Length: 169
Image (cartoon, rainbow, N blue to C red; front, side, top):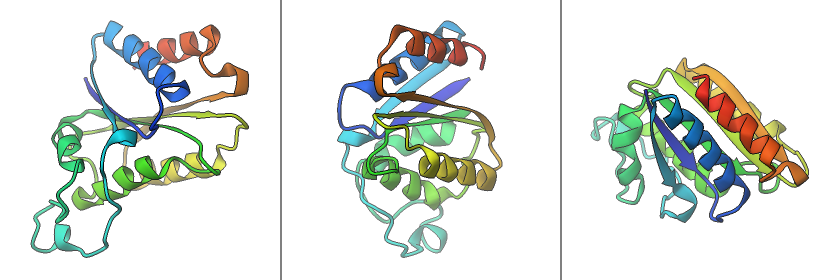
């Protein structure tokens, strides 16, 4: 199975550790994993111009780093969204990428999704609600949500749990 991970974090800390544990587990289970560091990419927000659904044939009019992600996203069997929580929501970087895949509507091949979230305080409700709305809309099976709060971030126990979860896919 081809898995694409969209990392919304601009930092190399907690979310990166979760992604690495997930990647290791998935690869040990025989899956192909590609990680995109959206938090460090230049991805603009959706303009709501509808070019993608009129003249663009599923392609966004904007030319930015989303073009690097889309080929893998279109070919993926599973998409994983990963982000720290910034002010009760995923990062703006992940939000931009997530909203811009609107250009294709529902993922072309992906039938599964997962969500990885890290936080100091555990304020996950808004991010999880957005993820659940996306999976419901796209008709994608929610494989699970993994969270790491406070001292759980980068703990051996939490990373082992995430790695074990990825091996079950």
